[in-house]
Image 1 (cartoon, rainbow over the protein chains, first blue to last red):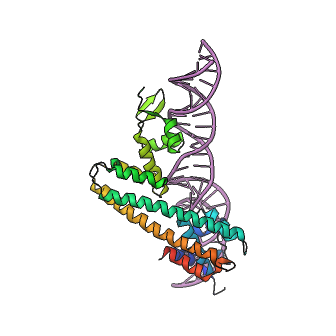
Image 2 (cartoon, rainbow over the protein chains, first blue to last red):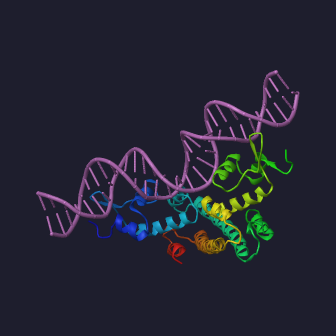
Length: 132
Length: 132
DNA sequence: CTGCGACTTGAAGCGCGGTTCAAGTCAAGT
DNA sequence: ACTTGACTTGAACCGCGCTTCAAGTCGCAG
């Protein structure tokens, strides 16, 4: 068997995922198995990079379908560039929203109102989270 | 009927939610109906503030169960304060992660590699998203 | 050769956050 | 009095992101 291929168990362990998740990702078109050792899937080491990308994007709130679309984009794909730019704007907006939320939480930690839910500053801050 | 109470349809519209979502939130203990007009739920105007808080926290990635726990916390609740502080740290971490992701996307928009997935800078940036 | 154990499959199940459905009820308008 | 239309209920269903299950298959150690 090819020395460069990694067993699914190895890949799963190093990517911090369950083997079942890898199979699931394969069905979704996110990764491909590059070989078999008996029935067992084996993967090129590059797959680890790809999985890092997948988990990162997933953690950032992308759906697996979105990620698959990104990964399947053709070379020099202008559409892909545009999608990435759009995603960048999306992520930016999300960062801004989370920042406002964090500021609200920060205030709540300091404020004396009881129940704090009634604190006018907190309420106003919350209102600003979604509608800056 | 009490002039200060708002019909569920009104509340749903103003909160940007479906009436079914309000009933769902009620089952989850996130809100309470303050009256009925026939069978129809009606709510105190404060419910709008509460719903703003709920949708904001939900958008920020809190589960409804977490939000319910927050809302049901007793007065002057030290545990609540600690939970909010913990959540603040969580949100902070998430902001940092998203910021790194955005930086990766930003680079991708500029970089010439084809397929960009192979761009070493991009790959390294991705690696840094989860493991700063 | 015989286990062992980690994988294989497809199908079913789960938790979340709701929506949708069917059948019914009510308030208000004409 | 009758219609209209927005709500009511419980229960079923949905998409997402997986995990779990049952039954089977393989590589490797002893």
